[in-house]
Structures are given as structure tokens and as C-alpha cells.
Image (cartoon, rainbow, N blue to C red; front, side, top):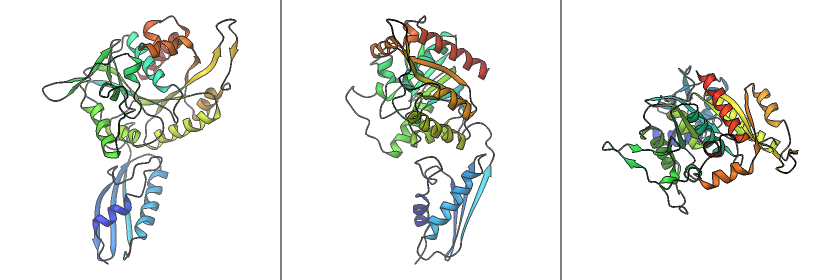
Length: 344
């Protein structure tokens, strides 16, 4: 049976990049395939400082090719380079943008988008030119949180002009869809839209571009680290163990693609009763602090459950923009100040 390059690529497409749902072929790792009769040699290239990543890719690739009918000897050669910066393979900076920061979580429902929106507002209030890109294509919420139904326009060069609210430049799939319309997208389209939001938007001169990532460790996250150089990531969690488990997965994902974790934010730390000021730790206590210590990253802040914060988001204005004296707003402003100092 004749062995073809197409058959080899099909086999390698079953090998996932460690920590992601995306395969090594679509990730662009396979650079050359040589076939001599029944013998196969594959050359790959990747940038990583984690020795476990190339080891796993090599072993899984050899196993996948070993099941190909008629194959003889198999040689998988990996060209491993140290990353030039804290970013994934092929990632480059966005012109005019000084710092790109990803806001991530291992699971949904921890308030990541609320954190991203308010942190972006807080950075802007500190005098930093800031943009916010909603990278959650399936469940976009930034358009709702800023109360805008404006459609992005385009330049003559077919570059997208972001929507502007609260002094921020915004981009979200929510600006492109009707309220009840779902984004029905498969892998290649997800990659395309994500890259367009990052590289074809006229962001201009920004000190910070905040990326509100979808929950989990899938295609969108991998596309982002492959496309744009990140200054780092902030992980959002809640105190209970079920959220912390997934926060660890998010931290591990960033470690595998050489993106530093700038810190951890614990959301829903407690509920303070409006009547008597009593503190109720609904989801447990100290989980974020312990996890930050375990990951050896700063605990950037602890945010309580706050009714005005929820109400402001539902009305389309983040609490930090409408009520800077609110305790949650003050905490976001403190986190933004700490973040600016860390990246100065």
C-alpha cells in the first residue's frame, strides 16, 4: 500500500497540542514530510520552554503514524526553539498596542466578563488608553455590559473601526449579531473571526488591550496565543474547589505556551449583608489566596458579591464607570494601579 503525505497529515491531525483541543497540523507545527518507500520522516518546529510538550508530541506522533498500514521506519524530528517572548508560536505584537492582557478562567460563571469590563474601565480612569476585545464568540457579553447596539464600521482599507463607550475601544461578536441570534461557527471560522478581531481592528495607539477570553482551554485560546504576543494573563476564579480545579488548568495552559500569569483575581469572595454588614462566605473562604500561593503568582484582588455591580452591568454601564466610590469599583481601581506598576 502506497503511503501518501495526505494520509500522514490525516494521522497527525489526531494528535492534540498538549493542553488544547486543537491538533498539531492545524497549529502549523508540521513543516516537512519525507517518504522513502515505506519509511517516513516528519520534521516539526515549535517554540516552548516546557520539555514535556515536545516529548508528548513526539511520542503521540510516532504512535499515530505507527498505525498507518504499510509504514516501515518512523522518524519524528522536532526543531525546538526557546520563545523570543512570552507568547506562542508565530505570535507577534499588535501595532500601536503596548500591552495585551488576557482575562481567562477555567470554567464559566465566575464573572470573568464583569472583571474584564471593569478592569478595562479602571485602567482608562487611571489615564491609560485602553481597548477591550470580547473573544467569546459563542457567548459575547461585552456589548450588553456597555449598553451598545452600535454596529462597527470599516475603513477604506477594510479595517474594522471599534465601537467606543466609556472612553474604551470595544469589539465583540455581540455588535455583529441580533440579540437572539447565535454564532454558529466551526473550528476554521472560529480561528478566522478571532484573528480578525485581533489583527484587522483599527485599535490605534493603546496602552492596554484587554482580551475577554471564553472559559476553558480550547481553539480560541490557542488561536490567541498563536496570533498575538501577550504581556500576560489574569485568571479569574471563585473560592470553591470546583472553580479552583479549572483555574489550575487555565494556569497550566498558559505555562505550556509560555505566557506568564500576572496574577489571580478571586470573584464572589463573600456577600456583605446590606442590612447589618455581616460577611457571608457563600462559596468558602481563602481559596483564591491559597491557589495564588500554590501557583506562585500574586493575588491581585478579592471581589465580593455586590448587587449594585450586577445591576450596573445589566443596565449597560460597568459599576466602575458609574459609581467609582463603590467598594467594588475601588478594588478594581486598586487592581488596575497594581497592574500598571507591574508592567511599567
